[in-house]
Image 1 (tube, rainbow, N blue to C red):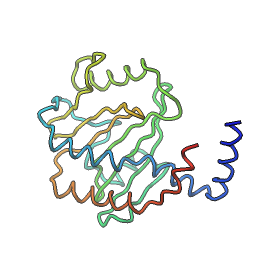
Image 2: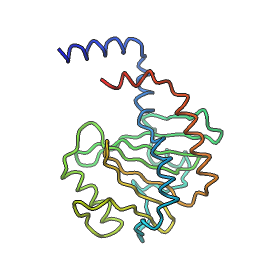
Image 3: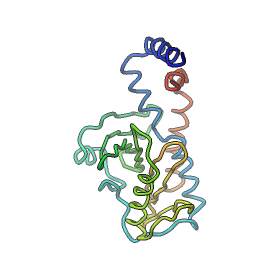
Length: 212
């Protein structure tokens, strides 16, 4: 009975959305607008909690500050490109899909003023087993800190000599976020402002579609 209701709801909702709109909303709902604003607050207030690494933070071989063109040259054509029309400084998000062993990742690369400042790695398509999370977490931690993560410990906030930051998140979706260092408060505020405008302008009607 419930499945029938869900199927009917999907049909009704699908009728009001084009394929392009559904695709746009799929990617929009995965952009880390709110999380990035929170990361800036952590970055500016919790420096005494950071664990320092001597290794340069460069996930997937990417370097913060890289241009859109240089990333596209190395990574190829994105699956999706999001343009923030409310930003006067060319805020864009490139999405890629990558697979490692049997784990599929949705990679989002955020650029502001044509420079890479944020990298997000999301596990997609299936729920992760606990041992898989531990394997990924230990891969990250041992790569940069050369120490294992013990069960029950809080995930460390890892920072390199350029003040680039790694934050591991496991509340709703398991993800790993990388934030560029060296950005002054004015630059951060510009990014946050462009995101806040975009969140307000986005219609809420798509939320019901993704609830099923």
